[in-house]
Length: 394
Image (cartoon, rainbow, N blue to C red; front, side, top):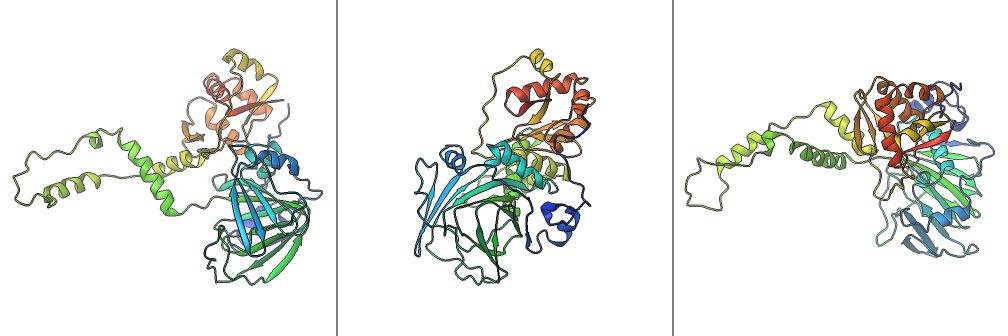
């Protein structure tokens, strides 16, 4: 039997061509969120995961986030898709941006998985852009890390460590008011530029070109706190002490009806001050929240099959996660599609579920262990019929 994992996980101290000969450990300690890195031929003989025609077709879909940016002299225009018609290919100065290409094309998802030395909880998506000569989005900054991989044609990148990050007013896109480039490179297919947050940069297509942007999640703590407190509020409805309604049997008649009663303030303060949460509560919230698909993601389940037929399929197929699925785990739970599943649902689950999340699929050795685990097979059958898992020929 093949003992290799479905996806080869990175060896943290092994030099990677993808990182210019740096090991993942070196890259993270020396460059990640610290300084830019230009890598020539990060992927030798690189080919675009999609042809321009395939990208244009994807831009017509209702469930794909797309933008079109056009420029004429100093006038910029921004349009949101889907797009049934795009500018002529021989027209200059336009750019098509398509988010989440990895959710729809296996080759794009495989490209995204080259960056598995970074936590999946931080990995966002793979965006692809097509730009005609002169096309770009203007000088700007990103609030997140990004790897910019050139996959077709040439693009010139200019970067600056400038402190002035003010934006132009009355513009449809966020563009720096002043931009003073300090370094300039022309990237060819296979070249890649890593940029940490808040590095000013400007990319301009030298000829008709395509670029893959591997982006990362960087929510504000305020956003996370808001989501956590909303999640916590949902959990409170299940707790009897907070399900009770406010009462005030000792309330006296008042002469100032608009004044907030001191007893009410004291009572509610005492109740709300009982709120407590542990690191495990935060972990469960993050697992559910970060594995939740984006609003534009829809699952098309396969033709439903019986549990018996599903078990039979496991003899010559291996299970893998659907590209649209994000799976995470912590010490106690496996998180799939916004749901928390105990890692103790069966004898093998504590071992196999993390393997499924890390490798995005099971090897034939893993699958052999799965066939001995009936409770876990039952769960996998349900997830398969929901479109969350796929069967791949072994």
